[in-house]
Image (cartoon, rainbow, N blue to C red; front, side, top):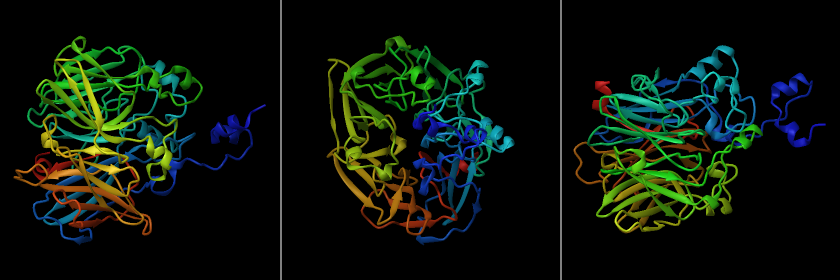
Length: 483
């Protein structure tokens, strides 16, 4: 006899074969503004409330999950097919287009006319693993990076996908000339001075972490394993001008949970938290580990060298929920354990770690002026986890200012755009996608980064709803023209 819990976990296909109607879907990430949009739109001359800055020339591209078919089983926010949303600014006007990232799995399902892959809450495809392929679909749904004249759509379990700009049409897998031998993080770091790309991949078998560096021409010049005691979820890392900073945090991978159809990662604070400092192009055996208070970190602002110390700025959570709640629906108890801006100082001379909160507000999706990535910064930006405000931090004073989005208006990751020829770190704009619940409509908000409290410079009204998503980037007009 099936227990009630087992019955509810049966896929609609199995239930249909038993002559039973499938239960109604209750996945929180398939409703409201998490629900997918399946139309690909191209629209010019968008309506703008306010005025776009004359110097604003280029394209904002943001990635996010958007399943092309209803999933066959339980759905997690991280599962959907990647969809890119792009807003281009040119000649004082704005245009929009959205396109799916056409990965191999996306095309396979499109041909079949239905979903074929389980998500993170289901079993991986063991036949594909046996054939040396990925057990889960590479959705290319998490982030984007502009590197070596190419836009890459990223997913941490596999290879990036190259995408044309400004059309956002998929070229295909990007494997650094077939030299990529491990998965590529969704958060690679591009050194703004050298053009090098730093990235890593993690996996459930040894070596659990591999780290690589590619030069400005797209050639991998360095790969080394990083030895850690157990496989963990390592979502992000950081670089300085001299070092790479890795995070061995207590989110271990367990095969048993996978075989039982559960979440393969579980927060285990008993394992503690370690931060590894490695010279940027050294062998993994030269890494130096620092013990810190147990925590989880999804995202970092940046890191930099300061005397004998490496300083890391990120968003630290004191716990990790068994199930991820949609950010805009978090309870006060969940928010109390959620990410907060935080600072670690690792002294390479004494081995000491000094750490502490920058702010007590629950916030994540941290960004900086990325022309300063890996170097000392004064300012950072993030999204309040209630999604109703964009925040700016002054790291000299640890003071926060907020731009409140207004009643019923929820935002996404803030992206900093430097003003051409700017000298001041915060001389530029912050843009983010905003969803208006009352209007059931999306827009792109343009804020003055130097004065976040001021009213928006412009609101670009979009022709279609943009579901809540993950990470984006700015492509300068000169880069678009040379692509």
